[in-house]
Image 1 (cartoon, helix red, strand yellow):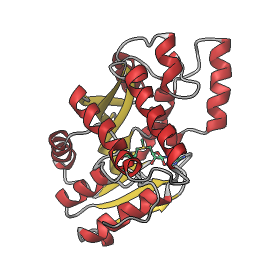
Image 2 (tube, helix red, strand yellow):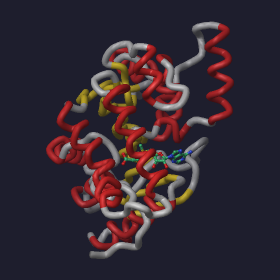
Image 3 (cartoon, rainbow, N blue to C red):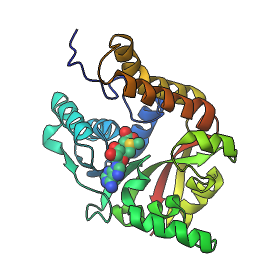
Length: 268
Ligand SMILES: C[S@@+](CC[C@H](N)C(=O)[O-])C[C@H]1O[C@@H](n2cnc3c(N)ncnc32)[C@H](O)[C@@H]1O
């Protein structure tokens, strides 16, 4: 068994989010109906959906931007194995204020934060304390995405939303500084998309089964590693990280945080 003795990273996930094979296939078919020539993936990670779009649209070129060098390398390797290396670039750069685009298909899958300046977020939080006018992160991300989409193109926007208002106890276990302001309800996410200059072609929300496959796959390789690496110098911190993550799901956001994928058409 190949084992470099370090904890593995997300090797049991195909997509870095709750997304089934059948839903992904439907998205690829929808996004390639109009034979796009360019695909831009914001916060792409290893860009699996972008690669599938390139396979389905042989005339298209792809560009993914992300800060995570390990995930970008995984994307480049996958592209090379599938004969796509000449048609896709994975760039290690921030999406904040990106000059990339416009593109015929833009993907922003659970990566809206990648477009937003963390300092500006802090200012917006301060503004929100002063009054209700500051845009939410979802609204700000959609406004940043609008100019990146070419006329007649499509944006696939994967975004978290509250299925119901989280309780204080749930928020306390979700993630550091989790707040009820971190997300909008589904109707408000969709309204934010229309307010940012899009019409909504398709709405789909992740099922409980997709969440369970994602959350299990997220930790499965680490659980296998832990079971055979007792006493390893990294075992204790890895066990704490895994247990904390699972608790944040089961006691925090399970059934509370939803994930919607909106297929959006730019207006005008
Ligand atoms: C939840 S992952 C989603 C990855 C990918 N879109 C997918 O669905 O598989 C969020 C990604 O955003 C990236 N990210 C965070 N801040 C960023 C920034 N300022 N610029 C570009 N990418 C960023 C992270 O490195 C991470 O890969």
